[in-house]
Image (cartoon, rainbow, N blue to C red):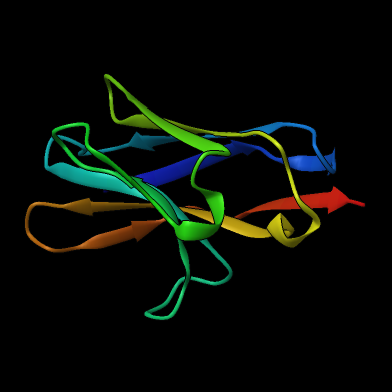
Length: 115
């Protein structure tokens, strides 16, 4: 069974940096795209950044040039969040999709940016 374990986040300051990490446990050999979303999981959850199985990254407009997603062997990803803004405050969810179309979500990590 696939599970996603998140870590990182917390309290940051405007202009500062935070990072998030997520790793897949369980039967992860079918995982393709991984990424980060804001708010609760669902169809309308804003995409922050995703990285495909071929390591191609896509970013949401609000974080381009400030956030960097990276993927590592063993199906783990990080999100480096630089030049933070108060509007970045939210709960961030790690997501993974397998090649059969199933999606998995992490437990959510709070990011709070003080002005």
